[in-house]
Amino acid sequence: MKENNFQNSIPFSEYPRPQMKRDSFFNLNGTWKLNGKEILVPFPPESKVSNFNGKISSDLEYTKEFILPDDFRNQLFQNNSKNHLLLHFGAVDQIATIFVNDVFVGTHHGGYLPFYFDITDYLTENSAKQTIKVIAKDTLNHLFPYGKQKKNRGGMWYTPVSGIWQTVWMEIVPEIYISKLKIVPDTKGFDLFVETTNCKLVQKDEDFNFCVKISVKSKSGKIYEFESSKTDLRIDLRNQETKDEFELWSPDCPALYDFCVELFLSKESMNQKTNPLDCVSSYFALREIQIKKIDGINRICLNDKPIFLHGVLDQGYFPEGIYLPESSEGFIADILRMKELGINTLRKHIKIEPEIFYYECDKNGMLVMQDFVNNGSYNFLRDTAIPTILCKKGRKKHLKDCAPSSLRQKIFVEHSEQTVEHLFNHPSIIYYTIFNEGWGQFNSNFMYKKFKELDSSRIWDTASGWFKNPLSDVESDHIYFKTPSLIERAKNCEKPLIISECGGYTLKIENHVWNPKAKYGYGSSNSKKELTQKIVQMYKKMIIPAIKHGLSGCVYTQLSDVEDEINGFYTYDRKVCKVEKEAMQEIAEEIKREMN
Image 1: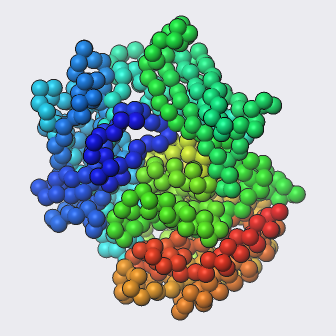
Image 2: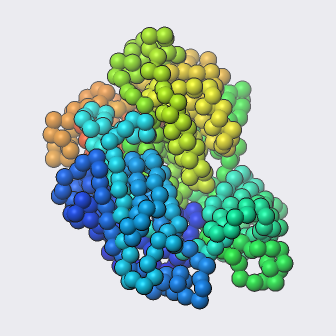
Image 3: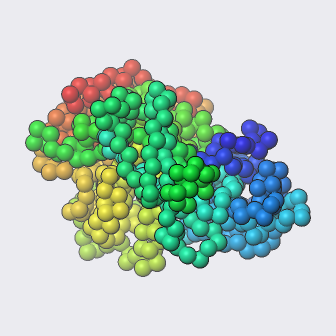
């Protein structure tokens, strides 16, 4: 892959889309101007590492002058080139309007998902310098997904972010190019769907008889080739001859395999070994997640074997970059820290990360329970206090949310659909949460049916914690402030029971707190030993005895302290592990023994 010369001196310099790589890659992270002052992109202006010292308002104007690399200029401007330049944004919060060389290009709404524009026609061929301008408007409008951001942060609500907060980059594509891959794996192989985009021609792609050639690399390095006269095909890999070359993916064996896709205009051109129209590389894993009845109990099964989702809540917040660590190493370190404690699952809590995070989960064998990002209003009494104390099964008439507008519902559905599409190919993602604790909840049964149809290959949790609805793949409870026996609850559940939040015991470590007055959590401790004892007692009393009766997962709150919350396994700066590692590892071993 060709990279710009200063690639290694800028933050998040790695290729930002590991599931679909091209040779052309120009990273635009680094120094930009924000409202006339310097900022280090992709860090949000509210963060320390952004180095931004200007005023942060709801209207942000980013500008960046850049010079196209010589190879980009050659591919775009020489010999009547038909190539195109795509400008990509990993995420911009909340509304982004893009200009190139002072000409309007397009607008994108929503602060968590990637988008791009073809900017070929906006380039100035005779000028070395090009200019990008991004007008970002972020009022923290609750019509749009917003997660844990709150202007008046505190308690379980955190510092908001604005503007650009993921990688900005460019790539060159041919006139007809591969725009999307969809990989649907199982334990024997995978189905591959290749989507193409035609930059100029009016006709739909179906008017062309595109063909694809797939080259798959096995663990021994051997290349297996597959061809199709269409843009979709089935690739079987674990037959009698090849099964030893392709292992199944699991937390204990996170086997990933590279493959390359070449796109041809016709079967004739493919057979004549002409150059492909386009070529991208990707990777896959062989795995299947299902709910199956084992010894009369419905269990979550990975590759036909029951698995316990031994999880931790992962908010994805960092003291230096808020929504980002200082580099992708921060994501990797969090994953490996949890693996060291025996954790096999992260519940990514109402936030969507840069794709490099999910790639590292794929590579390191960390299962992911992915939450959709909430929009709509939140009310403590309606959404937390009353359901915690009184009623979790369904909203009574006086507890109903303010009727969500059709626009809010539309935005949530579209954002969630795009989330599933964006993350579909990551084998680590095995579970989705639609609504968390009633936040923004509406039409729950309809939403379950909609998303189960959209992606039937994952587990769907319609309402994590509350308010309950008939349609969901699991029973999902939140339990704080107590450690009840769950044996009867598990026995009486027809569906797998998941304790999707629990624990949250606090321990303040002096000199490692973000706010010296921080105390938020769900039961206090005064030492590492006491905190560890409380956690171990919770697992031994509440979790482990219920596993043989159908309990299928537990998510402890949480991976690290976050701002005012001091209930993490680690401090917010990740410098101190607040629990005894050996005790946590023994809990993980006990859980494994219960599953065998």
